[in-house]
Amino acid sequence: MYYKDNTLIYFDGEFVNANEASTNLYSQTLHYGYGVFEGIRAYATESGTQIFKVKEHYDRLKNSAELINIPFDYEVQELVDVTYELLKRNNLTDAYVRPLVFCDPNMALARPNKVSIMICAWEWGAYLGDQQLRLTVSSYCRPHPRSIKIDAKVCGHYVNSILATNEAKDNGYDEALLLDSDGYLAEGPGANLFFEKDGVLYTPQLGNILPGITRATVLELAEELRVEVKQGLYKPEVLLSADSAFYCGTAAEVIGIESVNDKKFRKDWNDSLGKKLQEVYSQLVRKSEKTLNTTYQ
Ligand code: PMP
Image (cartoon, rainbow, N blue to C red):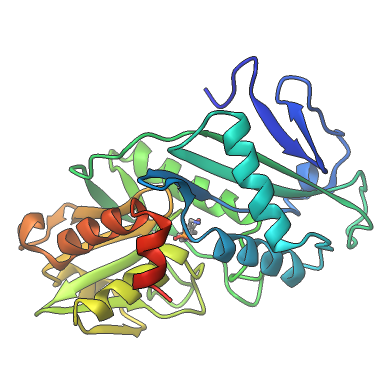
């Protein structure tokens, strides 16, 4: 599913066949989840393949590594160039790109001396945007920011996301909604949350959530649409009395939420601010670079 016989990946300075690439079983990343990664999307546009906010994603990768003491000796621009080359060599246009920085063999609980980077990509077709999620508030909370670096996209953090997703699916829901350790709304296992009430958008403030690049884009788009957005700490009851809600993230873009714990939102998704933002986000990511630069600088 992720690669075929002729798929190439970028691995420590070279393009190698995905089938032939291998790693060491004593890596600190494999044992302790001590590594960082990104999730990026490329889109076919009128001026060729464009990787959306690619620099922001590699800046976050670098920041994630530095926050957890993993040496990051790569130039962001070099990684951007390599990613375009990777897509070209694999004949990919609409694609998901996954860079991973992982550590050398070391069983100690210490910072690594040497790390590796791999970047792979696979086809990711157009998403129709008509699905709406049935959420459940998770019994798992997001990790406390004094236990981990919540701003970093660290491999090990995703055990929390997997547990919450498994629980939600086992209970018959599409997706989980996680609170922070004080019981305030936080985020999804892999997406940020927005909700609408009386024409105003609300989103959990930074501090207990991953600072999503899509979240930042939605904030920019809302400003352009002159939609007021408030960021703060909100209890789940506030969400349950909202008019509509959505998740946003690189993979899902903007996706409507139908219900939380079986309580449906009163507003039709098609009339919501989320639907409008879904449309403008979808247009933005599929715009040619030329148009992008004139609109967003
Ligand atoms: N929160 C979590 C926990 C995530 O894993 C993701 C996906 N990276 C997001 C939010 C959304 O972030 P982005 O918009 O940068 O993809």
